Structure formats: structure tokens, C-alpha cells
Length: 257
Length: 309
Image (tube, rainbow over all chains, first blue to last red; front, side, top):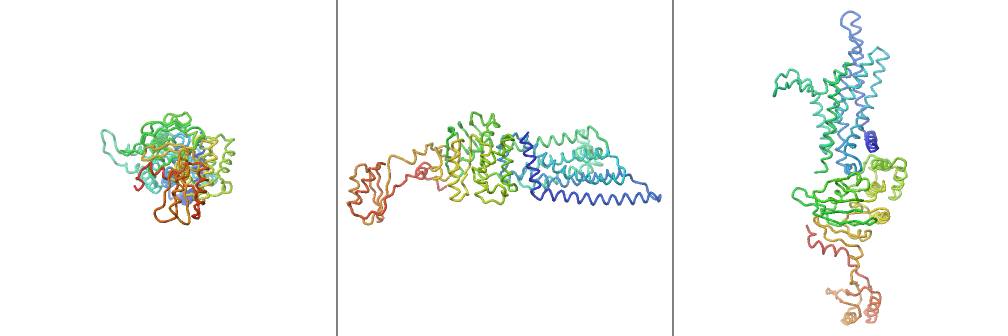
């Protein structure tokens, strides 16, 4: 256990010692800030129009759903820059040898690195509680839905990070790790939309719904609307578990090469 | 302390380490000598459980490297060829991380880190970024990292590479001083280094052990060589020297320089007699010095004329 915490501490610390953490958090908050202020403007416009009887009103809860959908998307885009270094950097600077010859299990290493990146991202997302407080100050959002949303975001992050970590473990260049993770995550994310209208079947499996199921987007959306279903949680947990397991195998396979 | 039995590592059809066996006793410093690519690093990586052997096994402090890697790793400190450092951490932070990673209990961590800083003379750079340190300091951080948890066995892969001469001698001193508490294996391709700090050497060539010797055996053979430089050469000097009891052979340098190589028994009274003879001949003795039968010669003899490859 102590080895896992040592790795988590080291990961978080090195994020803050390099510009990575600051750039990522800054960029993320900038984007989310712009989107939030746009949403506030839309909210005001629409509600003013509604009072004139010209348009249908929009509830704050509905806006929050859109807002967090955007957040899940931007988190997906930023994850590769967080996960690219996890293993690729260790390998290129020969510190993997240090970690692999320390008296720790590979599972502790993989788990420590995963939790390290997840903690940094959680810190980043926790700052967006500021927007929740704005909503509470000037509106009346359903806090239970928002709590569910943050759970959904957390599950999404776990799944992105585990996938990014796996890719970082497979390549030795950070740049390639970032680009590959970006492509894969983006493709996975878009699969939900791409699968719309696909009606063909393969060996009795309907391809469209299967692709949609594999994308985290649909699962996040239903949690985001306040509906925590076992099947969605199972999706996130098993996805993350599978990725961590594969990472473990890949890291372990370094010994045999 | 370390028992290696028939350890073999094969990459594809290339045999990196072929069936080597040796033992190292507690408190011994073992020099692992060989050319680049002879299989030193591969052997060390197997001993540290970083890569598994193709065949054979090794036991460290009674634990098998394949069956109980965690127990083995707990008892070794390892410095790879390139020191495994994080450039963005401070020296102190780095050692704090390593000591925690190696599972040292919380209450003794600080004391262990301080001791390691002290042993490696890193006290005055503990607050500096590793990335800003010179190569010699980084190497020392690497050594500190290997011994920070007080392991029974230290495995150092070319620990003196990249150090300046003063630091090399410091590093040798450090390795010598570790001897009392730790068993040390260290690899090098510099011959004078093993002579200076090892009890025993293993010479490895193309994955095979070609010699296992204690240092004493290599340096001091039964013949002492003495070189004499004189001002004038006359025929009778060599003959007079040959008549001295204990002298086995006298070689004159053919290229006209006034130098003689004398092979004799390594006894001081023989040496005294030699100097007296030279002085009596009145040829102007300039210098008389022992010729070390170097490890170098020994080594080159062993691995034959293949150094050119």
C-alpha cells in the first residue's frame, strides 16, 4: 500500500513540477469559463424572450446538462496530454528499471499511476464547483442531478485515463502516446453519433447499437440527466478494469522483451 | 549471499549470457569485468529480477529470483547503467520517493535518506534539482538511490562511468567502505578499477566466464619484473646481473635505449643485490622501478586477440 501511495504522490508532484498541470488546468478552466458565460447569456435571453411570450423557457437543469456534456467532451480531449507521460516517460528516461526492480507488484505500479493521474484530473474538475455555486446563487438547480453528473464525470475520467495509460504503456514516445490516445478516445467518443442509422448486422449482432454501447457518451448522458443505472456504472467500471488489466499485462511484458 | 547457477539468457538465436555460475560471499566486493556487450548488464538485470533468465536460476540471500522476486528485490539495491533519475525532482524528494517505494517503514525513512546523502557526499546539493546537476553528481544520486534502503546486496552497473578522476577515486573509496555492511557486485570495463576496489573478479567474455580470481592472485605472480634505466650500456652489466642469485632473466632493449628488464624472485634482498650490482658496474643508474604484471596483460591474454572486434 505504501508503494502505491508513493507512486501516487510522485505522479501528482511531477505534474505540478512540469508545466503540464498548469497548462491543462488553465486551458480547461478557460474553455469551461467561456462556455459557462455563453450559457448564462443564453439562459437570460431565452428567459427574457419567454416573458415576452415569444419562446419556450429553458430550465437551469437543462442548461446544466448541456454544460456538463461539453465538459465530458473537453475532458476527453485533454486526457491524452495527462496520460502520455505515465509510462512512455519512465521508459525513455530509464526509470522504469527503478520501478520494476523495486519491491512492488506491477499491479501496485499500474494502480498508483492510474490514481495519480485521476487525482490530478479530479482536482481540475473540482475547481468547476465554482460554477455550481454560481448556479445556486442565481438559480435553483437540482443538486441531486448535479451530484449524479459529477459521479458520471468521475467515471468518465477513470475510463479515459485507463485507456490513455494503456496507450502510453505500449509506446516509448510521449508524442506518439498523446496522438494515439487522442485518436482512439475521440473515435470512441464519436462512435455514439457515427453508429446512428447503422442498421446492418454481423453474425446476428446489430452493429449500430453495439457501437453505441461501446462509446462512453451514451452512458454518461443518462447519468448526466440524473439517472444512475447499474448498466452504465457496470460499463464504466468494467471498461476501466479491462484497460488497467491490459496495462498490467503490457508493463509486465516489458520483462520478456 | 549470492548463488548463481547455470544462468542463461538467449535473445532469439543470440546467446547473451551462456550458462554462468558463481557465488559471492557475504561482505565481498565482486568485480564483473568484460568488454562492452559481454553480458555484464544482462546478468545484472537477471539478478535484479528485471528480466527473467531463459534457463538456470540464482538465489540472493536464500531467495530465488524467479520464485520470490519481491523478497529478492527487497534485499537488493540496483544502479542501472544510466542512473534512473527524475530530472524534475529535487535530490531530497527523489530519495524520499525511492525510500518509500522500497518499503522502508515511515519512522526510519528520514534517517536512511540522511545517511545515504551523507555516504555519497550529496549533503550540499540535497535541495537542488536533479536535472541541473552535473553528470558526476547524477551518478552519485544513482548510487545513493541504490543504497538508501540499506540493502544486503548492491548491484552496480558501471558506477564510475562519467565521473572525473577525483570522483572516481571517491567512488572507489565509497564502494570499499560499503564492503563491511553490504555485498557488492559491480561491473566495469576499466581494469585498474577492479584492482583498486574488488576482492575478487570475474571476467566474462561473450556471455561466458573466462576467469574467476581473487585480486591477490592476479597481481602478484611468482616473478617480479624490474625495469632499470641507466646512462651507459656496457656488455658486462647484463652478465653481472644474470649472476645475481634469484635473477631469472635479463632482457636488454634492442632499440638502443638504455633500459633493462630484469625478471627475478620477488624478494627484497634480491632487489637490493640488483641495485648494488648496477651501482658497482658504474653505468650511471637513473631509475629502477618495479613493473606491475598488470591485470591488463592478464585480461588481454584471457580474451585473446579479439579486442579489435
